[in-house]
Image 1 (spheres, rainbow, N blue to C red):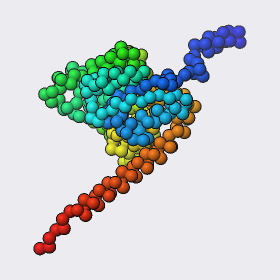
Image 2: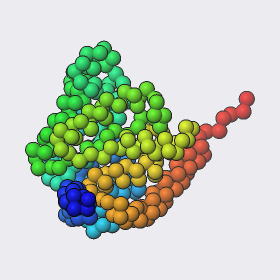
Image 3: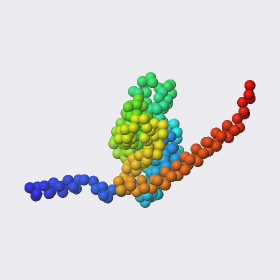
Image 4: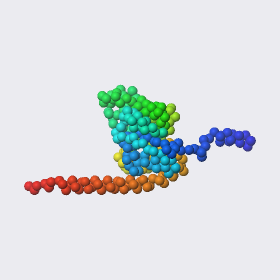
Length: 284
């Protein structure tokens, strides 16, 4: 019996991937463009935003990459496609993460339909034709980046409200399903952030508490960390390497807390000066 089992086990073992020798895809000196909307803009502008956490996480593992921030608030897939060359390709990065989809859905009549059939549904404004479709725009972004020698990493769109049963999350689902399908077809790494958010929100089970966002869409500290974990996994970091990355983050979180404190103080000061400058109402 053992003589029959041993060859089978040996063959099976040879067919398994060798995770022990897997390497981080990004190398020191590589440039990473982060293409996205306000979530990505915040991921760079916040000292502990997910873009900053990704770069710090790589550096904690000996990989010094150069970030190219390319997030603009409110942008949808058509706008990202229009500025792809200027904001990403012209800067010659080796990598590009793509975070797109929330605004395409969230903007309603001014959004971008998933496909031609949805575009004809009558729920969009009269400029919908000029915005194209999400499927065509995203495919063009991936194809143009690949043709320019830039390796894309696709991110599923994160939640629109932390109520997973919300109308907006229902509308977002086919957009994310398309991204998952396209990533397989194009053999592009993917960070399935929506799935990660869904799992975390269900596990926390706090319906009246913002677990991962500040307003249902934009990231709080926990949301930024979860996004960074997803991106770093897509770049090939294993659990031990993720542990090193996480150990580097408290310093950035301290910077973010200090920045938030200064902003609050500045707002309070401005409000006080405005109140002081306001004319005193005359007594009747």
